[in-house]
Image (cartoon, rainbow, N blue to C red):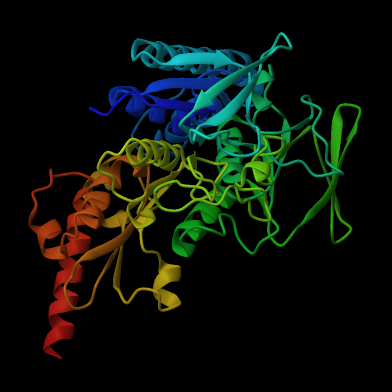
Amino acid sequence: MVHVTRIVIIGGGPGGYEAALVAAQLGAEVTVVDRDGLGGSAVLTDCVPSKTLIATAEVMTTFDSSYEELGITVAQDEAADAAKVIGVDLGKVNRRVKRLAIAQSHDITQSVTRAGVTVLRGRGRLGGGGQAVDGSREVLVDAPDGTVQSVRADAVLIATGAHPRELPDAQPDGERVLTWTQVYDLEELPRELIVVGSGVTGAEFAGAYQALGSKVTLVSSRDRVLPGEDPDAAEVLEDVFRRRGMNVMGRSRAESVKRIGDRVEVALADGKVIEGTHCLMAVGSIPNTAEMGLEEAGVKLNDWGQIQVDRVSRTSAPGVYAAGDCTGVFMLASVAAMQGRIAMYHALGDAVQPLNLKTVASNVFTDPEIATVGYTAADVECGKMDAVVVKLPLRGNPRAKMQGIRDGFVKLFCRPGTGIVVGGVVVAPRASELIHPIALAVDANLTVEQVASAFTVYPSVSGSTAEAARQLHIRKRVEGES
């Protein structure tokens, strides 16, 4: 147990509240300065709400894509041109989304306060510019009532997250032109939704609203959707989107969005104009680092305003750490939480293992989901990693056949000599659950032989992971003999 040390954490998202719990457990005197509610955007406006919305969409998609093949009959509504009697009450869905987000934030608050952490409501910033004679730093808290409170800290963690980027000519109004934080106020399903941006956020919302019943147009400035993901996985998803009726517009850059009455017009760089009832802007995010006194305190920011940190979450200023989306390291709640925990281990003198991004498992919550871990196809192509690759389509998997799953695959990467698993991709329903054994293999430096020899349930979709490992073992053996 370390001696009591004063820790101040600015921001109550995953990076902040997980760090607070660790610091309290290690005996520190911990204060969290939070403006919107513990859990941050991950709980209140991002991960928890979006995945709750997607859970409803997932049920709709799973049913709609496989009910006939599985022998399920659906009552028909003759008055609606024999349309299936199935729909969604978006107002009810969004009320559930908000209810669960608030409940999760409440649970986190209880957990943190039970651990002995002090929570101050307000906006935190570094004061005084430099360190005091005793090595401590001043944190100023701007309270909602206009008062300013000063708190001294031996170490400060900045975990302030990020907010949606807005284009000058596409300002959101919260009704027809929306950011991803505003969609949960909608009471009715958008009839014609234009999604600008085909990264993870854009793809997830485009797929979800299409499943819920919206007519969706996805505007992508790149050649394909999900340009940062595995190319084979992105190709599968784009094909699924198009087959389900989505209008995917590649190489189309949006320049402006106008609201005209109850319609929106999106002007593209090539002169085309597309119309809809709503537009969702998903064009990236901006770190919440402005007007916090960071640079005055010696904290270096990059050109995008993100805080520069090392692998133990240290900034360039002594005693100041940073975690989460404000660092731009890897914009995932799990990475933010790990950065926050590592920061506290380091600040309080506990054993610490530096952040290793090559063991991070991530997931795109589309349908099918795309889960990845470790080295990628791009790493192999550019020579960063020498690896043997096997891709096994799920259409041959017996459990996938039983469930009516036709799209997806398992892909494994291993070192050619040792057979150590260095990466993997899963494209399938619930790929977020199926990636875990591959993540364990990458983290523990397991070989394809070890993965292949572990028992899997028959029939199971995870059986394809073992089969891919067996194929890699055979290929490695053949190549070694040749």
